[in-house]
Length: 69
Image (cartoon, rainbow, N blue to C red):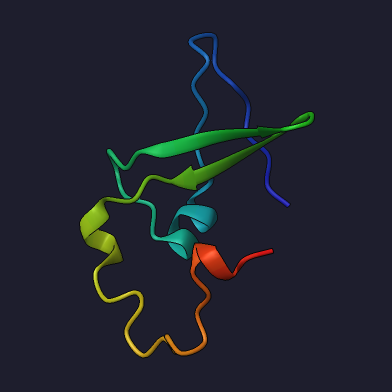
């Protein structure tokens, strides 16, 4: 477990080991998601990062809206 302290300017540094594991780069943007009293940081992705994400997906037996209950 790693800890960090929020500065007087409300900034926080991500520990190096976490940056290395998650491949966080300077200038990278994150989305803040509040879940109860927890804060989740999710890397903001560009639409181009999603290219090829569905390669090999099985598209058989996909229901359309008319078949839903």
